[in-house]
Each structure stands twice: as C-alpha cells, then as structure tokens.
Image (cartoon, rainbow, N blue to C red; front, side):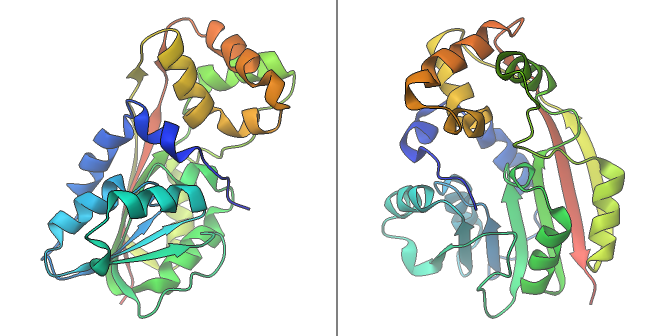
Length: 247
C-alpha cells in the first residue's frame, strides 16, 4: 500500500526535487496539445509546470497519497478543469482511459520495489509511440544515510529500491519499450545542519522508517540518524529514464 505523506511539511522544505523536475521536464518534447500522465504527482509542483507546457492539453495526476493529492488540488485551484486527479497505486493497473500521449515522473519510482509491474502498468496506459520520461533514486542513492539508519535500527534499511542501469533497461524492454536511454547521475543536496536537515530527513528520506516507530521515538530517531552523517549532505544518485512505447 502506498505511504501517506506529511504533505504540508513536504511543501515547506527546500526540495532538490524542484531542480529534478525542471531537468526532467526539459527532456520532454511537447507540442502543447498532449495529455500527460504525472506518475507520483505529489503536491502538484510538476503538475503545475506541465500545465504551463500544455496550453491546449491535459494532465492526469496520479498519486497513492490522499494527503498529497489534497495539497495538489489546493495548489492547482482554478486550473483543475485541465487536470484529472486520481488516487491510485502505481503497482496495480491504472484506471486511466483513453491512453495518454506521455508519461512523466519525478522522485517516485524508488519507493516501488516491483519495477516490472510498474513499467507494465505504465505501458498499458501509454499510447503506442508515446514517450516515457522519468527520474528517481538510482543505484547507490543515499548510501550514507541508509548506513546511518541501519546503525540506529540495527537492521537493514529496505524501504526503498534503487535500481541500476542494466536492470532498468532490461525491464523496459520486457514491457514493450524501445529507444531506451537510462543513466545514473551523482547529485548530492546540501542542507542546513540541525532543524532543516532533520525535518528533511524525517519527512522525505527516512520517513518510512520513522513511520514504523512509536510517535514518542520519532524525533530521537531522526536526530540520531542525522548525528551520524559526516556533513549535512544527502548523497543522492538519480536514475534518469527516457523510452518510447513500441508502436
């Protein structure tokens, strides 16, 4: 089941996701009339940017978190006539008809372990010849942070799945994609030590581990993880994907 997020805190943070979104949007080739599916739309940051690129098009905003979509609707107030908002699990067949022209996603897929099912569901709602452009955490992502989590918990940090290039290419091919481009990019994010770092860690990076603990232990756990990092840097590695569904 998809995780529920603290959407308000999420939107208040200095998210590197904003830059990832701009970078991924720049890889789209749009005429402005298309229907684009935003997979893992969250609070609507990139959905809003997509609407600016689609003056005569639509966006299908899909996310598994009700709280995130509530924030999205507030952010896109006045523009929802061109947005279909859908609460759905990306690991299951998506209730999207007719097929969309493009699928776009930022910072979502590393929270999904079954990428074969994910890519199959995306292919199912993408028209033949349509482009799939995405980015997420990739192999080696937040390795130092996860090492700190494991030190504190005394058990493996297994909430996220950071795929590599070869396995991603293979899964895309298996699910009917061609013209495949996949690469990894080191992209560390520096934060202010103390409150900003801990709020970011607890909300964005290690939230699933926080959720497993009693509420009384949340702050102490996040502080202990932060104190084990050699510097207030999140060691991100991004997996970039561009592929076309076979015609």
